[in-house]
Image (tube, rainbow, N blue to C red; front, top):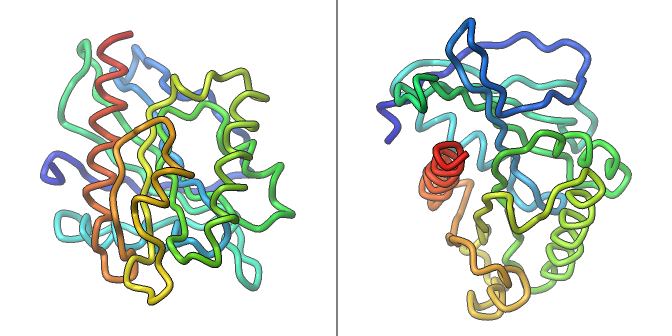
Amino acid sequence: MFQHFSIDTAIFAPYHPPTMSVFNPQTKEINCKIVYYGPALAGKTTSLLALQEKLKEKKKGDIKKAFETERTLFFDFLALSSKESIKGYRPKFQVYTVPGQILYEDSRKLLLNGVDGIIFVADSRLEYVQDSIDSLNELDLNLRKLGYTPDDIPMVVQYNKRDCPTAAKVEHLRGVLNKRSVPEFESTAKKGAGVVEAFETILRHVMMALKED
């Protein structure tokens, strides 16, 4: 699927949440937004970096960073375009990660504004499962605050850190983190395992949703 995508460079201005899935009749493009969501240190940025490495084989490009603290990127951004057209328009995808730390809850809600698809990155380690549950509950709440029905937003779940000794069984994670029965993937983002599959699936679901509109 990657042969259909290219990386666009972008220059950051102060962040103002856009309204995505916008049909631009002048450029004949549809702007779509995909967000990596999950608790702190679950592997969201690592997943985006692994995805970038796969895409670099086709065309070089960098993940753009807004601003950086000691442990957190405020958000990371990657722009992709597809050669496939929808109703005569070419989709362009803006891919973000959100900061996981508690103090950035407002920022996470802002970054969900206009979202078209979500990759929820869960920390598989048993001692951090509750953090993933809390993050998933917050995601549901933030979507509702923005006026969305969470079940209407395409989503996949990525169970990350599967190589860790304390990784919980997938059956347990599924029971507490995937009650919607959305597509799910085991991943080890630092090795690039499972990241591409999750991303390609959310792209397909977003594009299917656009075709149905």
